[in-house]
Image (cartoon, rainbow over all chains, first blue to last red; front, side, top):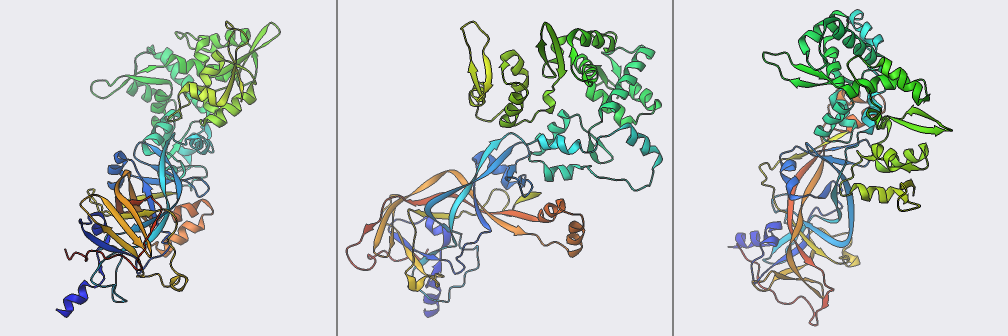
Length: 396
Length: 141
């Protein structure tokens, strides 16, 4: 009887009893024997729909020490925000967590729920666009070039310098994006995995292999709309390009037209991507008079492809100097993807924008919870001198 | 760096924790300040079958209710995974960036979930009689 009494003294009921407190009953709330700041314990508020990903252990926190932490599910990225509270949030664990020795004192035959810490607030998640700008920056540190391609044959076994080279694992540690977003980011950059490292081909190398592909198309009478993968790759390999990169070249400048029966895929060259490539090559030297540029571009564009000016949307800007129109390269792919930085660079480039010029450079901006009109309202000032005049956008 | 969020409970059977939330700050009398452990804060009582509760702290009584959280909250615990000496050496040999990699051995573990809290959002009412009011005896089941 006495022993039983002892056991009942100060019985730890924990969270269970607090949550299921029966009518006409009570429980003593006390400081836990190991009550303290417990900075290693944190509260994270999550959406019900995220819960299964977290409980299935598919979630990670990513970021460098100098960045805000983001939480990544397999497909999305969320910024983690700490939200403080001035209320006292007493945190009570279930009775079987945190070892509890109850021999110190007793307060009668009372069940106790023990408070392990007072939570200063909790962390909340806000969905954000993946932070992929750094990906391009990292992969541009060490571009794959003719030089390296030629070295590869010779320097077998020689220790390779891997400065500025990143494996998938390295990228995951450095880029604040979910796996799925990182994959599409790599695709958008036309990056390719070479010897375990994700690489971007350098412009001269891309130019070299594309020209070789076009050259071979003419020689072998291939149609740009129906390139047999095996055949193309075999010929490019014979010309000295690694097979993997030959295959990648089809991905950069074309799209799969047909899976192909019995293995070999059929690819179709993308007229726009091929033509834009040549336009960029021509404009590498700087500003050109529109007429001169067009003349040269027509010359450079492969026979059978039609280069039209609207292909250059988001790739060039034109300006009027007197009666002449000059154009220069200004590619959306070089612009940051966060709205604040994007608009800041756009307005540095040009203080006033007409809508038709601005649109190609802001169309891709996406902020969860903000429409494209909202985006313009937030980052630009719109003026329209008369009703039928073109609206002009300036910096806010 | 990457910190994995682990969950040992598996299959969504996370143990539920409880929150008792009240306005302001609970302060122990100065003589108890450094002896908080096991000290009773107050008595939580559910007088009837309604979800209303009272929380008696000293000579004050709070009235509140058990409310479901709009979104569940997870209780995370930072866990430092033990790193072998060799691994540490290897990681720290290659300058700055690898600090991140060394740290990435840290993990967060989900140790509980919170779906309800007992919320006391009113100001406390002073009890006229001295000492806590009589309450029902603790249930043994």
